[in-house]
Image (cartoon, rainbow, N blue to C red; front, side, top):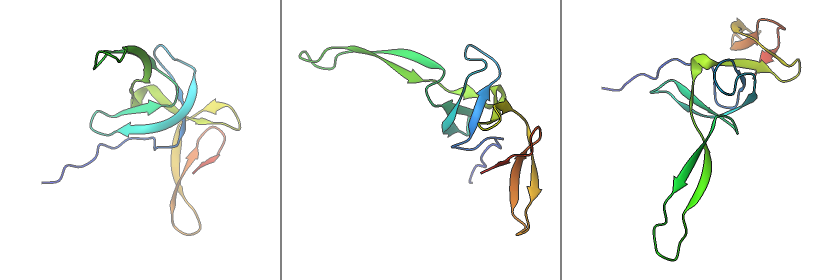
Length: 110
């Protein structure tokens, strides 16, 4: 039996603003969505340090920074042109296609 994806209000490639947590107020682009846990990964935000152990004797261990996931309830769609975060609603265009539109400034999201 095939499992359904959990419904998430943002899509890959959307610009979002983080509304709670350590990175509150910062903006970025969504690079990945984890539907099972309802989390998103935002480009260059919520960075965590990871220590990688050396696999062989000649290799040396290193410390890298990775982007950690954020729950979707903590992000909000963001207008890059007007610099505001807003909720959205759906409208139908003249070809009967659903489009997302920001409520605060009526900007259409692609």
